[in-house]
Image 1 (tube, rainbow, N blue to C red):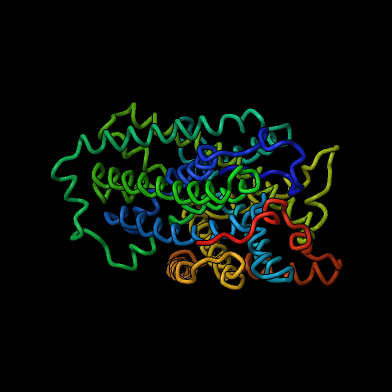
Image 2 (cartoon, helix red, strand yellow; image 1 turned 60 degrees about the vertical axis):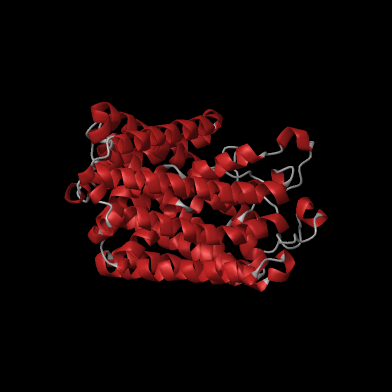
Length: 455
């Protein structure tokens, strides 16, 4: 996932120096979605939706596409580096609702980093056998140090990593379908699918693999022509991710018998490459997974720290997240890393994946509900916004039911995080007098200059 800039002030330089074009914006979305998510949770989803896993990916993509409509409309009307942070304040005002939702969004990213770190550990163990928790904690600490010292090298490598991992996935897709047999194709038959509840549970669980398209809106303020480029970048990245996900899932199902696939867990994709590409394919996929999960930990750690920085700057978090340490804005980085380690140490991968998807389903439904409140400003059609809010909430309910039945501790932790965000916001406002009140009073130049778009 890509990072966001550290301030929301108007650009002092000329547009020529910092404009983000369509290709760069597409790279942000594709890189954020086709990354650590598919390498980390493929085996978990296979254990739930089985041979219907491609259908689960398709359903998740459709829901993401519906949610993308609001992000496009809001991003075109209110282009800023704040993205969903700004959207929630616009939709709910500067009160407790937007403050607590933004805190919950921050915790959602923390859970996602824990998912990526746990996925990294699973693949690292195939090369050097150390306990999973050791690898997971190690990668978080390593990239905390890199972010502290300066992550320019990793930042420049992000686009290269995107190209590498997408290329490897395409090689896997081609090899899997070239090696397709009658027995393999029979595994995709609807006769082998589980019931609808399992299929929709799988779709809900893997939604964390689609949520990255929202980060494209963080680049809207730096786009030369956001009204034209933002929709193409968001819809295009969702479409690309959906196609690749469905093809990869189909390749996995046709290559590996279901009874074996369900037992592969978090390194399923690398094992699925062995039948068509041999041991070389396994190692190639494992290396791609290591690159992808490592870069995702790095970028999402940086990005979530910046989100916390912006929330604190607007008054929604304690000054510690906006405070300099050793002359640098890193105190929030250390707090974020510490919170990530709590989730890494306390929860297994499947639990973290469930919490991450459930959290983002709530955040995306909240953005869409908030959008309905200000729809006149964006001139958006009502039915896609309503459909997105309802579908995100429906998948959340399905996933919550699954969590309560299979991992009640995770469901409790998610509830505590949500309620805790609300209580913290209420208590914090009353005890400090600080308010989340700078977004509506400081309009971004780009949004101020542009009237609401016509759809």
